[in-house]
Image (tube, rainbow, N blue to C red; front, side):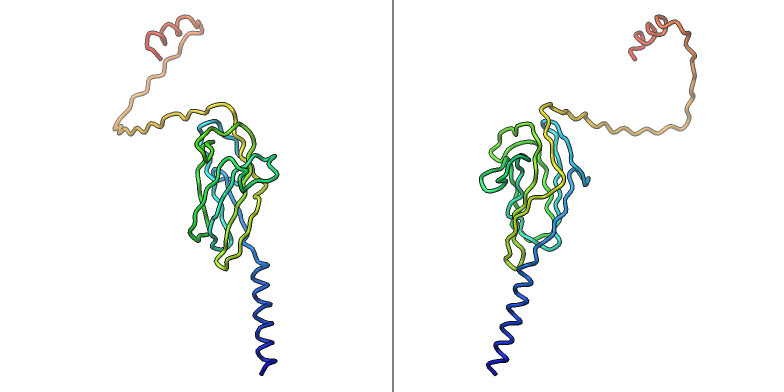
Length: 175
């Protein structure tokens, strides 16, 4: 009977070790593309990360690509979500976690997660980077217009080759 219990413990330990060796796999996109992105000051980048199994997203760090110790206290921005899920999606506009402006540069991602078995993992994601440029990018306002046309008449006017005549006409029409 002792051998039976010993065998049971060895088998349980073996499967526990197999589970410990297993870590979630991650994929990610930046602005819905599997590629690096360049954004201007004030322009948002959408970061979407997927895990192969439900995990708690302890931290998703943004660090300069030259930062060898990305994570811990070495980061410019971090996000977290303490619920188990297979995805996390966040938007970043170049603002640090303390509310300041992030310096221009190239940034990488690092994730710190815990799976449902309690296994913690920390992994730097690659190969995609976020490049934050020094220039501001202003988005143009969106305008939505609808029209209903029952009948339309189109008149084609051929203008002479003399530019001053048609330029005066366009100025007069304020086009």
